[in-house]
Image 1 (cartoon, rainbow, N blue to C red):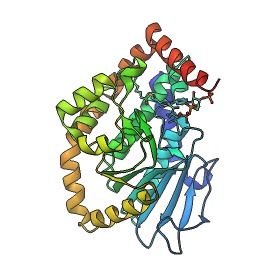
Image 2: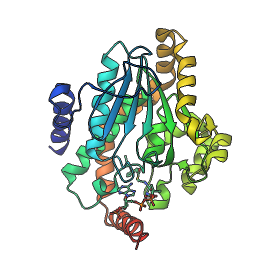
Image 3: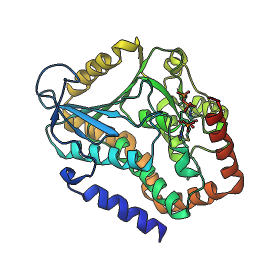
Length: 302
Ligand SMILES: CC/C=C\C/C=C\CCCC/C=C/C(=O)SCCNC(=O)CCNC(=O)[C@H](O)C(C)(C)COP(=O)(O)OP(=O)(O)OC[C@H]1O[C@@H](n2cnc3c(N)ncnc32)[C@H](O)[C@@H]1OP(=O)(O)O
């Protein structure tokens, strides 16, 4: 039942005409992400989309302060924005970045996984799955311009992209640090990392919950390029131009060849994966770990 409610909510959101989204900011024009006139903006307050139709490129900026945590709303709005871009043949590429200074994304929203109902957990996890599937199999060239720290789910978002550019700032570490929270990165998080850095590096990184600073991130291959902070966006645009020089059909079929087997593993057992998540996240010991971790984050200030 819970799963059906979750699916219905997501389906309703996905099918809702864009212009009727409660938070939509349609047709606003703004300064060009890549320079030049004709840039149009749409999206929602938490997921801004700047489009440059002449270049065929869009920029998705996550804006969920203070830390760009991936709440249910962010996940849903992100999927809707992606779908809109995928369905508009004007666009061939998208850059994913952050509008929160110093933070790409703090990952999954811990408050969505702590002290909530089973129905809520199921709805949330289906939304996490949906975003991963959409990003991982996107026909668009997807480039991450990582302009801040990027733990766990934040790292996962960038791992689904075709290429990762990271700003060279020692504070901007990246990795799947779930074990440090006393939780476990699910198998498809693990697969995404293995497909990027190889088995041994992934195993070590996952067990130790490693967060790599830029130079090390580049060395292990969890990012493809490290550039000075003020050049992240221009570097992402240059990389985009190179990837867009390849004929779409050939690149897309090749991407599909590389990624579909991994995605299919989740698609075939989506409901079982949700049930597994429900069992895991509802355990007293896991809820306790999450509460302790959240309390530590909150007390940091005091
Ligand atoms: C099939 C499945 C089977 C098994 C697996 C089952 C289960 C689970 C797997 C789930 C996978 C999980 C993935 C995740 O992404 S978990 C999230 C991991 N994220 C982190 O560890 C990052 C935590 N945050 C930080 O380290 C810092 O906040 C950060 C990002 C470095 C920024 O630091 P700073 O600028 O100093 O900001 P603060 O720490 O003061 O934070 C401000 C404010 O935000 C709150 N907050 C931070 N991170 C999160 C978060 N991820 N979710 C929710 N809220 C967050 C923090 O508590 C502060 O709140 P306050 O109320 O005090 O303002």
